[in-house]
Image 1: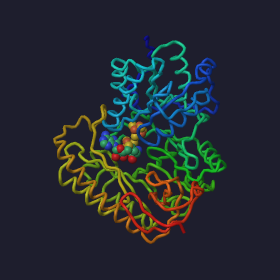
Image 2 (image 1 turned 45 degrees about the vertical axis):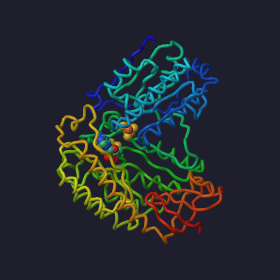
Image 3 (image 1 turned 120 degrees about the vertical axis):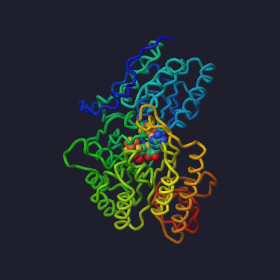
Image 4 (image 1 turned 90 degrees about the vertical axis):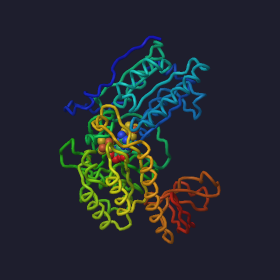
Amino acid sequence: MPIDIKQTPNLIKARSRLHQQVLILHDEIAIPERLRQVAAGKHYFIKTYGCQANVRDEETMRGLLEAAGFKPTDHEREADLVILNTCAVRENAEDKVFGQVGVLKGIKQVNKDLVVAIGGCMVQQAHIVTDMIDKYKHVDLMFGTHNIHQLLDLLDEVYATKTRVVSIPSLTSESHEALPAKRLHRFKAFVNIMYGCDKFCTYCIVPYTRGRERSRPVADILNECRQLVRDGYQEITLLGQNVNAYGKDKGDGYDFAALLEDVAKTGIARLRFTTSHPWDFSLRMIEVIAKYPNIMKAIHLPVQSGNNGILRLMGRRYTRESYLRLVASMRTAMPNLALTTDIIVGFPNETETQFNDTLSLVREVGYDGAFTFIYSPRVGTPASRMIDNVTPELKHQWFDQLVKEVEASAQIRADALVGQTLKVLVDGVSKRNDKVLSGYSEGNKLVHFIGDETLIGSIVNVKITSSHLYSVHGDLV
Ligand code: SAH
Ligand code: SF4
Ligand code: F3S
């Protein structure tokens, strides 16, 4: 099959933070007439890996595909079009995608007309794209994180010309505010407030795959939130790699604290946000979170390490002490605050003493939970060029130790909920027992209780009677 390579990603370009003009557009996207005819009767399947940014992108892809007339299916073997929406944050995320690309090769041998597309962060990397072009010839389309708005035009070309298409810009030139979205959830919604990341933590690929920090216009964010409230949504989660930096790129003084306050005033029942970077977390933000009852008292505050030497090598811009001070200010303002975090073990040349600092920090903070990762070198990042003397065996041993410490901390926090009455947004029936309902507390704890299905989508009071590591049980009040 012929191939049309329009643009391939370039790391040096992606790293540049030159102030290229990003055009903000509010026009609706044009749907190619030829694609409408192709789409009639066809089914699509999207598999998303990675973080909430990708989940929100999937909603946009669904919105576009359905606007063109494609119908969704839950079974990839019944699909005419499969999109893998990929993540590049660690090697195991990429391995999963390569495995799935292999599975699709098998499916395509049976269903010759299957169109396979790959988008997301993984294909923002040149070495991956080269591999896909050379070795995975059944992949028909590769598109990136900066040009999702072109998805329909690119698919149109694939279908009409029977050509493989590669179109992966390294920079954003246009930001489309009026893209359709098919939301995945009926009463909980993700709202992007900014794209990209400028922090360049030395281990991380995200600033390269997602580009520079771009805050969405506040009017567009508030309109989207107000519409969600009108549509009956109960919970909004504001999304960004580093939400606390909202507005910094615009420099008009309107910051994340101001935005949080304005979104809280839309009257949404529950407001959350993720992810927070300790560097940009101001005291004013803490005040706003504490002041509004509809802003949930749950903060995901990645620490990555408890050792100052490692934090410096990671380029995290805070120390153990300043992180602990920030946590103390939060706890003073919000005594019931639930805190979660991300931690990396086995950064190049980490020592036992340095690792122990992470363990002691976990104990000191008392997290409600944590995502823990073994360091994974990412092509092109500064950390990947460091010589690493720590053996994989030792890293795994530390990882197991860390998981135990996190679990001990989470168990203490969960036990403390017993006897309390929590407000729970009911999500649905429990996966394990259809007489049991499940939902999340304000502190983001999974709560199970016996109740009627009609409660799904509402907020109820549940008195907690027992606790487990990742969930608590209780009785409807
Ligand atoms: N912007 C968010 C999330 C980034 S990715 C933040 O800064 O918190 C989510 C988590 O993946 C990070 O917090 C970090 O703990 C982990 N991570 C990122 N790069 C990694 C790497 N190369 N190896 C292992 N874990 C990594
Ligand atoms: Fe990656 Fe750091 Fe940006 Fe988070 S803040 S996305 S860890 S570079
Ligand atoms: Fe993965 Fe990209 Fe998110 S690398 S974690 S999907 S921003």
